[in-house]
Image (cartoon, rainbow, N blue to C red; front, top):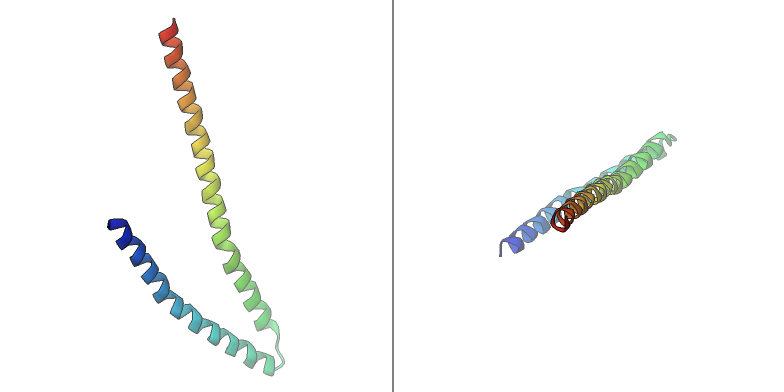
Length: 93
């Protein structure tokens, strides 16, 4: 029951935060449209760069955490194998 409450709470949080992010898209679009009407294109380029930065960062973060988890699990596995071999060696001598 506790897991269900945590998952439900996270889903509710994502839905509530999602409404604010959709509103931001309309604001960004309006900003780009007004700057394009004035003949400037630098706002659009900066906005696209910002979108790509925000797009890449979560994947990069997940990749780094995954790599650290993998490296840590391999190190723990080597330690377990070393301890197991020492225990087997102690019992067979």
